[in-house]
Figure 1 (tube, helix red, strand yellow):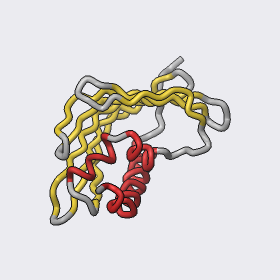
Figure 2 (cartoon, one colour):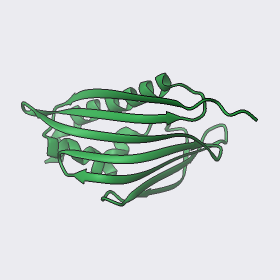
Figure 3 (cartoon, helix red, strand yellow):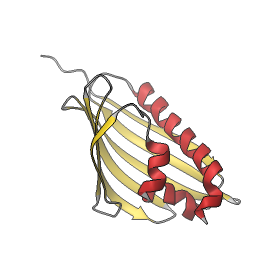
Figure 4 (cartoon, helix red, strand yellow):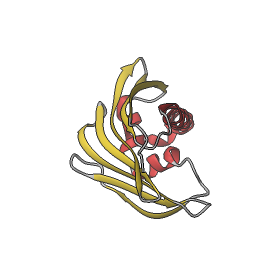
Length: 157
């Protein structure tokens, strides 16, 4: 069996968030806030989850899709400076096969009364799926984050 060629890519996505860097950071560090924007497939059943947001901590989500396939997201937090940045390495698997491995840096840059969120991903795609789908999925999630921050700023205080 010949494996697909590994595709390496780096992309940067920026979003303006109407919250301070400290509050914008909370949407990554607090499970109840993160869950509000990170869920992209509400029809998938969560089989297992773990969230330990600290340097050396890990995050895991394992789902069963509506078609019965297993999907897994596993991350390790490498660097965290509250309200400023986080760096994590993560892998994704489908049906027990690793499909990608990434290094992600998320920066929270003060911008007036809000925050410029800068998301940089360096990815190795292992399944031949192409970087465009990953970028689009990430953009969709960050758009959802911006909408939720906009709607939920008042409840942060």
